[in-house]
Image 1: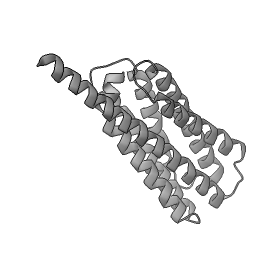
Image 2 (image 1 turned 90 degrees about the vertical axis):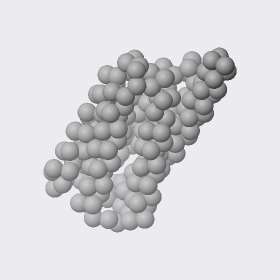
Image 3 (image 1 turned 135 degrees about the vertical axis):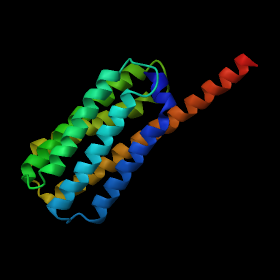
Length: 188
């Protein structure tokens, strides 16, 4: 699993950048219409789920393929549900967002535990998972916060999640470069 993540470090950085941009858009327009919020979240969940699903089939390591497939399918399903049913109530949207965050958080913690012996800085991924779970639980417990408040909380979550994904992706890139140097030294 670690080799696949190291090889595809850029996917994590890309996902992180998308999360940060999403969060900044939400900050810029906190009073956006519900339909726009639904659409942005739907696209975000669809892209993130698609990236995880694709990640399951790239690289040679099959150690965590089923976790990537499951979270990818769920992300795509949440995204499609949100995009095809934009008139869902605010409460339903909030619970979809909460479920998405909690499931992704659990997955990220599991991956961090699996990576603890293979790379340094796996704790960033674990913190990302804790942020996701905390966000999901808070949103699920307070569904009546109001659209603007929920939008700002979503923005904060997306930016924090994105930053942590970018950091771990850059660290994985460093590991990839070190492995290439070792390989060059061994083959020379």
